[in-house]
Image (cartoon, rainbow, N blue to C red; front, side, top):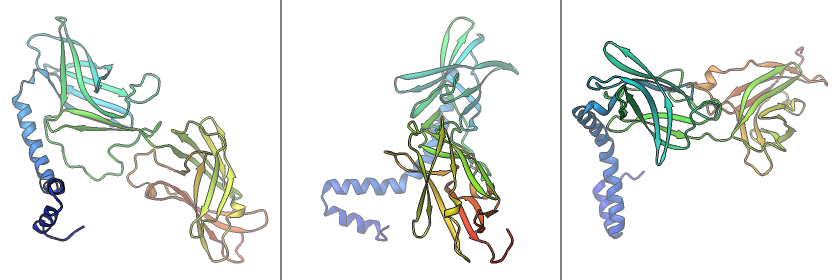
Length: 338
């Protein structure tokens, strides 16, 4: 990044013509003003929202996406001037598309509450939301037969995020899609949907004295025919290929331990990928979880491996901070019994 003063940079770009000058001016103003203006405008917008008519605003007491694909909502309906709400639907709106799902109405202390637990995704009975930003709303039916459309808003400023062992917005465990709730500057709730990437997700590691098996499932991979695995040694990129047994979306890989034994006094680390002809390589690992620090929490045991020819070494599977599976092979002490 340049250390020149703003006046120096502006003077230099003036010589580049009016178009270049305008681009630089926009960038510099954005760097200086946007964060502060965004914070100030959020406060102003929330105060303005409180001054507007509350007849069409349902104020949330809780809204969150739990376990990666379950939307939980509780909101308080505004007074409806003597009428009684008899039914309500939660609306998800994106461009010209609207998804509807029924919600529960409950009266408490003279106020009407809306409660909803909505499964998102492709499962049977779930609400499917495609990529994009979906605005949340309510359609409330009164006992008079009138229907009212309401916005769902947070009327208080968001609290600062706290460090926790789990992340706030985990991916969907089925598809890897992320459903991220947020609010506009005026406090209106919205869900941003971002589909997940194709994955080779580890479900189980079986490590015993004579072998290692990796069991997992493909996520977002339509064609799995011809799949094979690569075990690549760090440092010199030596690669061993082995077949992958595929049943539906489940895969099984047997590590070629006989070809992975390290030389005496050395330690070798092997990375694992699955390749499908005509497609990109997929790192094998764990991504569809809610852990802040995967490598610290999921720590498979180190095991001593004994090959049929008598060669022994130590095998320690582990996950990198990014979630990829790695196999660390360390030579056994000379003369030690297996």
